[in-house]
Image (tube, rainbow, N blue to C red; front, side):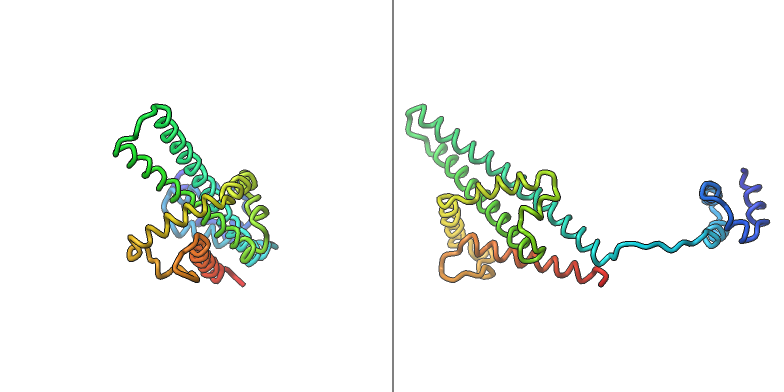
Length: 231
């Protein structure tokens, strides 16, 4: 149908006839009207399009569930990628230390520095993994209302990632190493690390103290988001 023919045809049709078009005819004519760039024709077609009333689930329920699922997917991604980085760094430390022992030589100053850099990186990544795990575990139980494994199970890798990370962070020796390293950083760079924002009971800051701070931030984001949802 040409532009001129379409224009004449639409102008000649009354609203009742336009309202009787089937979905295929209506879509074809709308596309042609859009191509002709005539808002008047498009308005007539939209105004005469049949209206229907639908039953749907309440958005207050479904939107909240979608938000919980979105955060869960992010949690799985964060835990998985952080664990992979931790495993990589741990293996890197193992090979650096053991290759040095096999040479039966005293490491040079540069090699000692490299060993310490990898050690520091390992403590940092372990701390991030521990904090992320405990933040999301607390969020699952206190905000979502289920355990972490149930919450993350909506992702096809969620259960596996949760189990691996749980085993990894449940290591008292690694926790103590990471906390000691973290507290040394606080002593040296406390002003730049916002140490005063971390709630703790004594002079030593624990990973659980930091996890508590991050949990409060995540819970605040959730509360702000759900206030925007329909009641």
